[in-house]
Image (tube, rainbow, N blue to C red):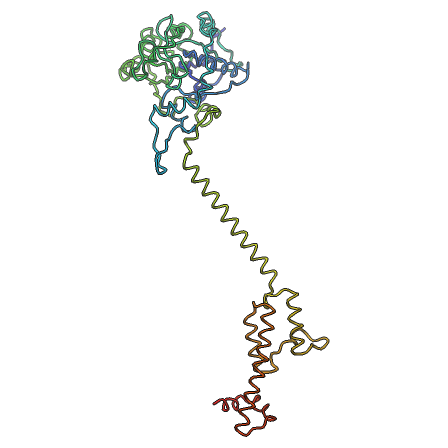
Length: 449
């Protein structure tokens, strides 16, 4: 049968499965199913990738992510913000960025329980299993089939054999994963040589040359902690660089000169490498960005990212609630006060009835059919009018005060009559004519003079 072009994605350095679907983002123009081969050397990560690949193949549930899926300090810092390990508080509510070491310590404390559960799976360290899965590349997919994912639990290189990893422990996972023996940095401290594990290593350059052809579309992504130097140089030596149609990588200058490697590759291949951080490549696929691909909150997650700011916000919220309640209470009380007190003088219905009784006793009861206005003394006597108007101005006074003012008004009028009688006698006016004086304010003014 005629051989069809194959879509092949080689994820070398699958990490926490966060680049397994990178081909969906950067090779959208390709149609047909994809063969995906994922390589990961870290024994503590391999069990998770194994389950995730089974999930992508529809052969199991999606495994829970319990630790930050980062492969470097820079990626780890992105997750640290979510779990309160990015800032530290100083005095007077000031804060500053944590150092990398402080951030790692904070995250290590937060995830110490799920990190402690990470264990290697001896079955995945079997070389025969690795060879069995590499052989799947000899079985191309038909155009009607779905994407196929194959996990190869091995390190990549330019030779077959074993690779010794050091610091295979949860503490080193916080720093980015296990280290290759002989390339440990002094910054990792004396514990870097502990917990060594030998993992299978695959000559991927030879495997690519023998498994695929130049007519295939091979998308290669590499983040292999320095193994890119030996692997790419061997691909060039084998004249197999033409197999690679797209290359995304992260180069590690601790293992060689990245500029020289890039120039050497460009001379032997028409495909320009895309470095992490270029052309939208962030080091993970769009389905695994930190905003959507992160572990659930650990049981020991710190609250340092909140600190005094949370206290201030909490106290302020309480004060605002108290103020709102007070305003609502005042408004409610004001509305009730307005309902109880009428516009005419602030009296209740009972108080108005008592007022009418008092006015009836002083001025006489209204005739049947007369309105309430008939009880008003206004218009009956100017002096009483002034007294009544004064009472009206004191509309908020109690009924006792109204009575006292009415009595005072009567006593004032009686006293005024007595005073006028004395005056009239002195000027020769009889008491019987005193009403004339009342009716003529001008005459009264003359007497007062």
